[in-house]
Length: 507
Image (cartoon, rainbow, N blue to C red):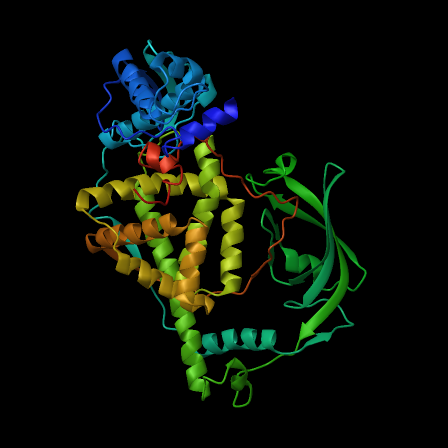
């Protein structure tokens, strides 16, 4: 009979429990503060509203219900109510919960940044009784907007010399030249192939086989760094083993190793060396056919330096703004919220770097650093987001369709891809919300800068001192984004906001 019930209830197109009823519910809401960003909400829906929803549902069912011995629409109401009570009760419950949460969101009783957390099956509904249910919800914290005008910010400047530019050109040319086997000892900037064995207190943790790295002062993994790497391996030969230490980040997937220093054994399997190259009339052609002389190559390298300087200036400005605005923002952020937003903050940061045309090597190093400090960085980003969002609301700063076109075009240009494909990938990955906040927050930053004072600082020439690789030293585990405990409602329908709202999302 269950199949017959379901088939009958599907006929009117409302088997999902949604209703056509536009009349407001007269529920009572009790909101208790359980944390700076957390609320416990108790909702009581009066019996009149409960009965109204049941009546409406049975009224929809009467003309189409099929009961043996009766023509459709001719069965007695009491018999239909008895036959379909269980199914109708579940549908009414779903409709009441959905409409209540939607109304709460529309009336903005609080600024939700997540889905309501409760067990759908635990909610009990009786036709002639009020419906009461409780849920926990993450919300934006309440705070007084800090003074954002008159902040002192850094302004970076540097007159890049020909020698500095040519040194950078030499590094590029080495990477573009042939890699030759080396039979002597390891030198700085050689490419070496390693086996890496990691252990903690004598217990094996992980093994990486045949990884290729460039010898720089620091070797950066996704979840930790080996500082002084060049000092350890320079002068060593093939088949030599080197003892090293690696500091593992506090957000590493391997809980045993989090925040600890682990022991490494590095075995050198192979050594290759780039041919030394200098920028001259013959080598400049390796940079590409678009360059007709050495001067154009130097201009391109200078432009890359200037992009890095602009990025570093923006980073320092944002850090100064964040430090100033969040000085009193000591809100306790829920661990689940931090964990959920960690990946999204990483995506946002990488998107910003691509938008600004940074190199893949630079992005890899920056991404590794963010991964290793994800808890701290995410907490900072969340606090910053809440404040910048409030300033945007107060100043009427919003995004526009043209903004998305411009941002996507810049990202596409840096990737050598079409804007259409980039937009499609962003949509599928759910990253347009991150792009939205990137747009709005950049405008807020520009507004703050227009009211700031500036102090000039020298920009040190970028040094090629980190080899960042896309490997996890003690174990990989991409953070999973928690899903709602009940799937009867879409988060964007329920509260007007989904759990993707913070720190970088749309309202």
